[in-house]
Image (spheres, rainbow, N blue to C red):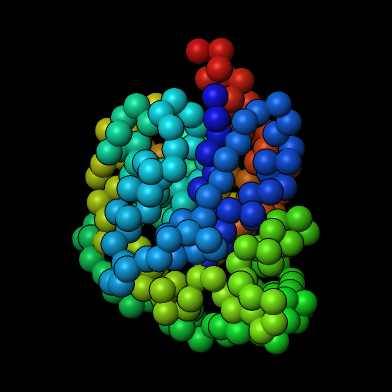
Length: 249
């Protein structure tokens, strides 16, 4: 049984490295979503259904999906479209919002457009990012993974998720009906959220869980929105427990 890892907006597959490295004896796979890392191009304007469709392209039926933010929403979209795709899901602060389902400008899109695109060297990019903004509190292996797959070139280097694309992903984040379709997802689901998250509150995560057929919630103390990169050991423990439970039927 394969565990599939789906990353968040603006990041890439290698941020999951410290979680996957702890899952010895378990087959795992991760990929770069369209518009990220080595993933295929992402057409503008962005349609979030492209991420769910891509999950169906890169996974085989019968595995377990583990996703963060946009990547978690993409797993839920894929499962709603193909109910046999996954045996269980671990969704960390999924970007699944109630209607009305519309595009719109927001603070995250505006921040993306202000993001610096290029750096003279990879080392200077790492120095610019380390311990700042979303990277506060990250496990060093997750951070190193981002520096490998989130930048392209040997000097100068540039972001693989272009800020214009990133901004449009955020504009389109509320324009998919996964909130309504979640009721059709009738497999074990664990939703995790960070107690200190500035993206989704624990109360909202509980509202999300109520939309699914069989979902539980874990709110993690001292964690923020970037829980998988802040506490990869804890996430790996939860993944292993899910594998053991579902593997035993």
